[in-house]
Image (cartoon, rainbow, N blue to C red):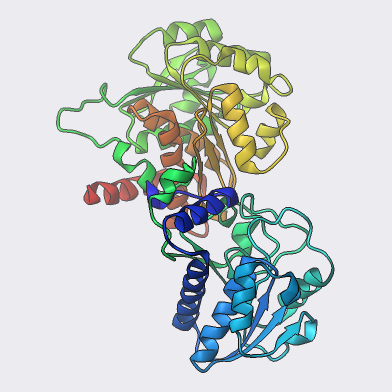
Amino acid sequence: MNNSVLLSVQNMYKADAFATENGIPSLDLMESAGRAITREIKTRYYPCRVVVLCGPGNNGGDGFVVARQLQEQGWAVKVAALDTLENASDDLAINWQRWKGEVLPFSEQVIEGADLVIDAILGAGLSRPVEGTCRKMITALNEADVEVVSVDVPSGISGDTGRVFGAAVQADLTITFFRAKPGHFLLPGRSQRGELVVADIGIPEDALEEVKSRTFLNTPEIWLDKLPIAQAHDHKYSRGHLVILGGDKLTGAARLAARGARRIGVGLLTIACPSETLPFYGTDDPGNILHPVKNSSDLAILLEDSRKNVSLVGPGAGVSPETEAMVMTALRGPQSCVLDADALSVFEDRVEDLISGIEDPTLLTPHEGEFARLFDYTGDKVTRARKAALISGAVILLKGADTVIAAPDGRVAINYNATPNLATGGSGDVLAGFAAGLIAQGMELYEAACAAAWIHGAAGAAVGAGLIAEDIPEQVPMILSSFFEVE
């Protein structure tokens, strides 16, 4: 799981400190960082006219190292600095003095005629708006017809949140060190960074034990060993029995969720729905079991069967007192519970009522609008999801182009592989079905939510343009087979 770890700015400070405490001088780390940047530049660009924009911190020091190394290899290099040598930090000052050329002040004119600009202006720990000369420089850079390589993060982006502080560089390539940061994958930072390279600069892997980050990039590394694989002794009952509550109007939502759950491997699936809608739910997917329920009392009786080990409530359910009653009934049942869509919206401004019913393992899968109806939290997406998980006791899958999955124990994963083509009606219903289907097969809720989000993104990428929600489940056999072949 070490390769999936994301480091906050404070985590990275600790990792740097661990390296220096274990015999690696900070000046050597800076030299290694510059060497890594130079290497990545040389693999992508021919020798050309380069301008290096250096800020007042360690990013600026990295920039001076790159300038020196490129110049020594025959590249035409100019350097411009935001501040003066007198105000430079120790390592920056040393590398400033090692630079043999002129140091120009920041101006819009300094990048004229450049083929490549190295953005070494601001670091990942930025916490206030970019203003004055720095903002003018960033604006001019974004308006120029020039390739841009950013050091660590594009200047103006928070490494922790991906937030733009007033203005931010639009990079073609960003090179960071040791491990990536959340802001590389949270929007809008992900859109600003261009291609991302994580370079090894000699920080010991043991530093990860020191910083103990609880934030991860959602890669198969963090859940693949728990993904259910059908065994020779399996039968339909051993692979779980999921109950999905079907609404009386938007019947397609539950049917899409059911399709997703069955494609991802659940052994049995029951759609519980009003008797008058049985013909609609029975028009396709003959493998679904249909069970009529009139009210929450009927649902409670259905869920008394302990073989039915997961319930999914919300897709197409409608916002009504009856839906609320169904949710509370599902939460009181012996099953794990997945709540999506209307099952969340029905508790708008009354999240305490929902939380009061959460006792057994529960997964909430809101999009941003549904999340806001429940939790009035401010801050970045990771912070909000983590807080909601802690307070509710549920796993939170906060959907979006940068989906965040948070567990009550503090673990957070950021999903990165979603395609814009997934922004279509019914896509979220399929995702809820994926998660519920994996939980029914025995996965823990956090890992199931992570796996569901990643597989959902991979399926969207496999379909490409023209995707509709019905296409998503059909990609799952191919995706799962690729995992099993690896196994």
